[in-house]
Image (cartoon, rainbow, N blue to C red):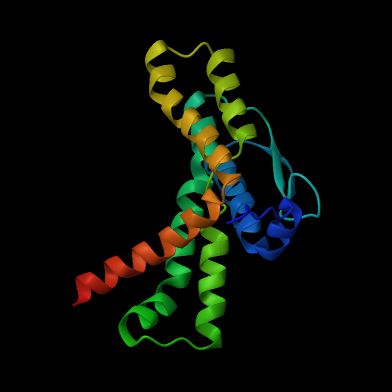
Amino acid sequence: MPLVIIPRSIISLATFPGVIVHEFAHQLSCRLTGTAVFEVCYYRFGNPAGYVRHERPRTPLRQFVIAMAPFIVNSVLGAVIAASAMIRAFTFFQLDALDLILIWLGISVSMYAFPSTGDARALLDNIRNNRASWLIEALVMPFILLIYFGAFITMFWGDVLYGIGVTTGFSKFLVDCWQ
């Protein structure tokens, strides 16, 4: 089976809600950590598809929260959005047009959960610039490596598989608990 290559701009256009939620998660975490936001672009045609420009957070912990916020927000929101449709599919083996829209939206949001490599670089720079202790660096380094791994698997549809896994896994868990 040949490897299908679709330009990232086409994928981001088809899944734009995920980009918007990803950037919103960064902006919200900036607000929660008291980090000033200079500019927000929720979606645009180009690379990157969205961004949040903010001041350097005062501590590595704040930078960590800002970098990792999309992972939590996009994963949870995507799973919840798709849940009702996926539960109908698992329980009654039927889907209507609204269900398909909810599943597309849930997967679109979930697949943008991975922080970017720019987030990883900013986190590493913050640790180094603030001369964080070796313990902080040791605790954060696995997350930085996971961010780079997430970027790597995106080249092989890992983000799409993650989105599908989050939406179906959460819904299947709910169905199994209910029965």
